[in-house]
Amino acid sequence: MQNSWRFLYIHLTLLLALLLNVMPLPAAVKLFRPDWPLLVLCYWVLALPHRTNIGTAFVLGFLVDVMVGTVLGVNALGYSVICFVVAANHLKIRNFSVLQQSLLVGLLLALYHLVVFWLSHFLTGVYFRAAYLWPVLTGMIVWPYIFWFLRRTRRQFKIQ
Amino acid sequence: MKPFFDRGPSLPLRLFIALLCSVGLITLDHYTDSSVQLRSYLTATVSPLFYLANMPQDMVFGASEQFMSQQKLIEENSRLKDTLLLQNGQLQRLQFLQQENDKLRALLGTSPVTEGQRLIAEVLAVYSHPFSHQIVLNKGSKDGVTNGQPIIDDLGVLGQVVSVGPSSSRALLIADNTHAMSVRVERTGLSAVAEGIGQSDALRLIHLPHSTDVEVGDRLLTSGLDGVFPEGYPVARIIKVQRDARQPFLQVLAEPYAKLDRIRYALLVWPHQGTSQIDPKILEEMTPPEQGQD
View 1 (cartoon, rainbow over the protein chains, first blue to last red):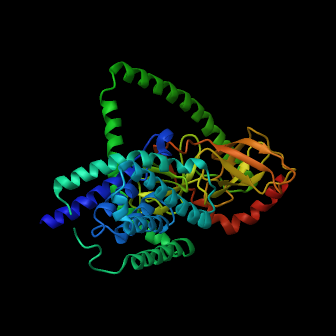
View 2: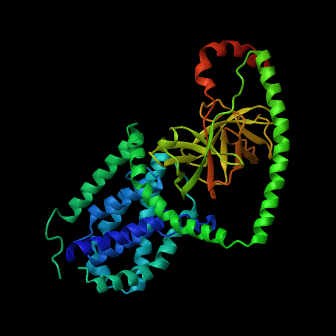
View 3: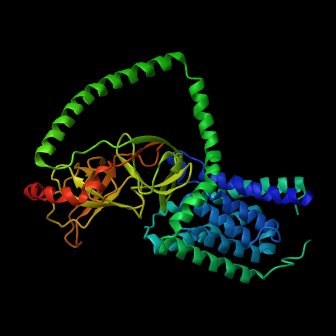
């Protein structure tokens, strides 16, 4: 019972992040939408690497592909790569302050956007615009809030 | 603390498997045709999520309609009545012109342009990911939506349906990178291909020689030559013509009439049934007048 509830909570937050990712927004702020699923995934990988791992990242990325309409597998690949970097260094990253983490998350987000852009450029020939990188900045800004919120709820529900 | 990865394969191996799966998926989706079926199935599976994600917006709109003052409603009502009157007046003239056009076409021996069926669809999600401009509509195969069906709105052409689920469908917008369509310049009758460049406010006309007569402000209409979009719908207005002798072709940009980044309702158009049936017979009859026009 207890175990399934924990399992459910992690996936509930990931689902919520997916919904935020496709929620209709006014055109003016649409380009600034942070990559919610990736940020939430990063937190869970950081906190509980034995529960959420590359498998979860792959499935989540695949769902993003389906919902966003990019070529299937592009986001799955990006998510898996980021998840690998975070999982391999999770002990180090945990010891950073939230602001340092936020800078690192910015770096990871930039890497993710680079991977997705490269693949999309290779597959469909998209052109680069600097505006594509706004989510990196907004992601860095919202990371501390996501971190605090998820850590608080994780401790409240005693998810390990 | 729990031991790290107490079971299952090691981390790099997991990454390797994930990468292999992703590359497999990309190949399957991009280089084979079987993915259309898969896509429509997946679209159907995740469509409840789109309904869910749309709920807050629907609630806000619903609430604002609930609390609209009576004065505002009366104003809006009278304004709508005015537009209706105006448009009905224009419609009378249109019917007359349509009849006349049909008669003239009959004289020439060409097939009349018939009005197809239409259906209003609500937009569940406009996802303008920079790399994919698509919308999800709340009508699917249950409502008779088919693959490749054109969608328009009150201003111009929006795009075409690319995958259909039972109660929702996904449409590619004309601004998407992978989309191209056949258009005709209204002023000169010149045919061209307009392709999306991944920006919701610009299309590009490709392969136009430097000697082509195009000007800023020219209207582009669908030409019907691509077999997807019916003829004569407004698509875009030319906003930039750059004659650079170093480039092999003219650099022409056009702005779509439809506001592609804020679509709420779309009109699904069933192209007139005529085309596929008349092809063999009428085509021969059609050739002489067409040659005359050119």
